[in-house]
Length: 121
Image (cartoon, rainbow, N blue to C red; front, top):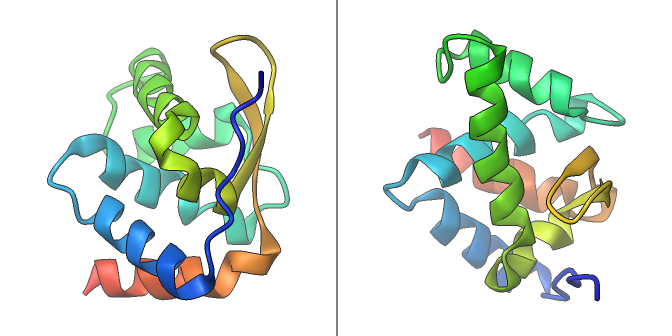
């Protein structure tokens, strides 16, 4: 059974994203910097693009380590209570645990941009 995206109104979606990205944990930070920021500039964000970004940002020393970090980002998207992330980022489920070809939902681009801008302040 697929895990469904959220259906929040923009104001509540913005609150949930802000709360998630402000958590003092590595995965929300990586999700924001390495996935949400890539979506507006790429039609499709592949696993390879995310891994390259993780290495470029110094989050990982090499691609293999970046793959392990990507697993935590991907897992966060698949967590039932993170439906607000699935509302803003779509993906293909290529296996039970692997997601690929991430893309931002253009309907929520402005919400995500505002949240990321505030998170950077």
